Image (cartoon, rainbow, N blue to C red):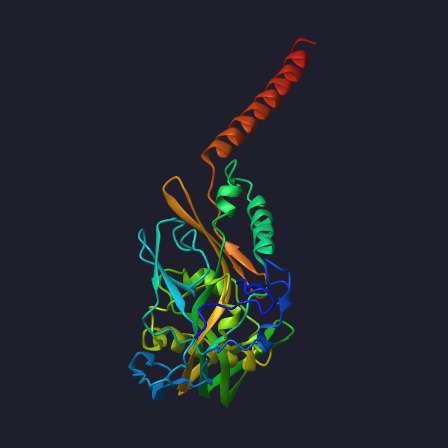
Length: 369
């Protein structure tokens, strides 16, 4: 079993180039198509974890009791290493020859590596499309837009902690039924008189959403992950170890059962939006009299999605920057410099003092003139 991906020419370790989607050799300069290298990659055939929600009413979604089926076992994959952060306990997985430097979640260099012995079974993944250089440029541009960004914040020390991380996601395929009845009013005017016509309506439809992404990592801010959506799931492929070298993969700590409530809410929000969209423009106001809409079923798939992740500490508080490694969408929080705010205050105060002195001078000259 191979413990890494070797260059067929010189035997050096290959690393994925996100810009070209090729495996590059740092020794001889050769490049190879990952899909054409035979290295005994382990992958799943796309089995899902299915949940039953047949009796879940729209007005009582907390009664859903998802039941998981056993996913098919993964085939044997090349040797992988798990890095554990002594500071925050994060667990990062990569190939055995990728050197770990900083923890993606807390920025600590206190990482301890060991051979991965537990099961690591992603079903699908989207490979990185943006390189580290592109992520660093995006961070500098993004951070520079903050007028209160601290001096020296965009430094080599901070940027060096940028980590390419495959974040664990559960992709939910949700099937739902829309079944509502209500009344709608159409309002018109004849002179000064308001005329209201009331109509009854019903809406029935079958809905389906594919690949609704929910991250399965509690250390990752859900709002940040949603902020860099959407991913283009046309780029989804079966998990392929050949796209991992040079990057890290986080191990999920939330199961589909843990995320079932969030997935149900996303589905119910989708139902509400579909109802509102179907009534928009048809009535000036409406009332729902009976809503029997429900989630029928949810299938969950385990996938790794590419995210550039940077954590940094300022005045004893952690801040985060994330970039979608496939689309380039960015999100995060920038610290506020009290020094800059104080400088701005005194500048404004000085300008007001000059204006006040000028105005008072004009008044005094007019008084004595």
